[in-house]
Image (cartoon, rainbow, N blue to C red; front, side, top):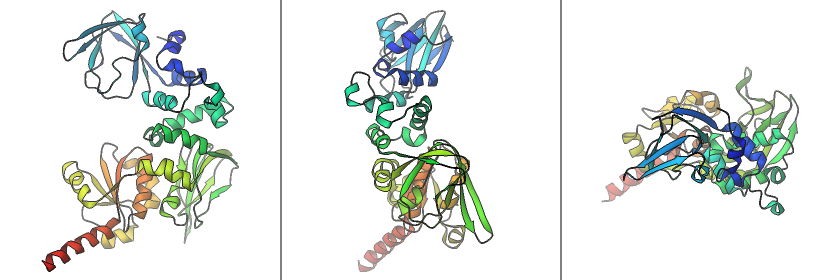
Length: 362
């Protein structure tokens, strides 16, 4: 079954988006043809999809036995089905077969929240005009970025401000974008091309990772306010979008990372099986690692993150919280459920000594 473009353009609230954004959404949706009696969704579901009926009939039944029949040719089919979450209704196919559309709801919401409507062109609310994207490739890159783990978790207002704050730079193969040991000034997102991350050692340069479209780098130095801990060099010609340190902190870092105290961490460790991750160097870990923790040094985090289970929670720590804060941003950007220990091990030790001192006084 193929998409009916006429019906798609009339769906609520997709009808409020410019044609180019509708086309991008159409490329990202899923079309499903289901047989009679097949469940489309259940009462209590909390998925993000906007689900529409394109062909056939659906029966919707609520827990209180309220009963609805939705016909694809009716006006009701223009709206997403049972869209408040958790869903109130269970939906099953009532005709011989039915065709439904599953559209990424988070992308729709972000576009709408950014003022992405055709009815206000005088305010420059068309995405192409706002961000000076001139080609379909530009639009495609923006939509791809909206679909990354980091951007999916940001408030919509932050996303709008981020795109307005990006500065584009053109790059050449072999060009070093950031140098090991330099002070950090920008956060970078790759719009086009590939680059490699490497670090100098006594025996030569060691490659840590390769990055491609929509990958990012440069956050560690901005968060820790310390020199760059690796160099990044373009492998191919490309284009980068960069953010100043101030914009990065207020619009991207602060909304993504979650500080936690040891008192707050204990229930996560005991009841939810959270993992303790020491992001200090291997030598530091060997000398003063916490029992039951795992060691992934900050500079190795990108290459090691793929082995981490996305269904688990992680509590990151270092000596004073600086490195673990940077590590938390990296892993949160990759879609992991992470916290960092505020103040690090130093804060834990200081609190323990304070309690012991109070006991001795008592």
